[in-house]
Each structure stands twice: as structure tokens, then as C-alpha cells.
Image (tube, rainbow, N blue to C red; front, side, top):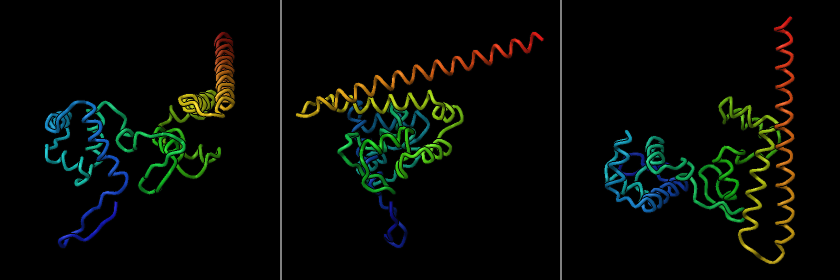
Length: 215
């Protein structure tokens, strides 16, 4: 979003993410079978008064969608805010425009928007720790940093790759799909091992607590 002088005042130009939001409002409204008037009524009933003309201008990219507008629309549509902020595209070979980051791989953009990993700065352990510290509330942060949580994230990533690779057959993908399936199995075994380790640790602490109380 950039600022330009227009008629003696500063006008805000909608950037790539703003244009994506505009397209997604129209997409989700049509998918829901709502007219602009009905959607405006629903958003207003949700506590964010908005007129039919304002919604029309939002869809055309002629009106800035504020954070409150976007949140209320996401609530009414029954979607995550990310479904408005990003194109519905997560093919690793595709790229999407993100304000502030430029053109980025679609799957990386969705992983970022889904609170899975930082958009930039790499996937190093330090970057992941900093991302979790700054982005997640305490319980989710601790779960993400726990070995069992890390194992679950590995399963999620491997399953995503497997489903993507197995969705369309092209020559040479047989080996890739088999390798990914092996990775998913390995990741699942790691989850089970980490869960067992966490439960064993709890049981050991509980036993020590019981013995201390009995003394």
C-alpha cells in the first residue's frame, strides 16, 4: 500500500495483498450464494456496520479493507483471516504476491499465514524459535517447541508434500511418492515415540510426587 497525492490530500493506494483481499471477498461472497446487500446486512449484524456500496467498493479494490472489516468478514464467511489475505493457491511451484515480501512461493506463504514457519529468514532452529516466541501465545508456543509438537509439525509437512505429489500422476513421480510415504511413516513413528516419552516423564514425576506426599 503506497501513498499518493490526490486532490490536495493523501490517497492510499491498495497494494498486492489488498487486491487479493478484494478478490477473495467477491469469491467467498459468490461461493456463499450471498448478494452484496445480504452480506452487508450480515456483517452489520456481526457488529461491524458496513453499507452495500462500501462492500461493492471493497470488492472492486476501491476501498481499503480495515483489520476490523477483514475480521468481521472472516467471521461471517466462516473462514480464517488467511483465506482473505492470500490467494487460494499453495502449489510449491506457484508464487503469490505478499505486501512487504514481494513474490514468494505459494506454499511458503500459506505456511507463514498458518503460523507454521517464518516467511523469510530461513527455517533454522533459531529462526523457528524466534518466530514462535514472537507469534504464538504461551500454550501453543510450548507445544510447538516440545519434541512431540515438533514431530507433529513434521508429519503435517510430510503429509502435505505427499498429498500434493500423489494428486496428479506424471512420469517419474512414483519414486517420489514412495519416498514421501516412507517419510510420513517415519514421522508418525517419531510422534508415537515422543508421546510415549512425554507420558513416561509425567508418570515418573507423578510417582515422585506421590512418594514425597507419603513421607
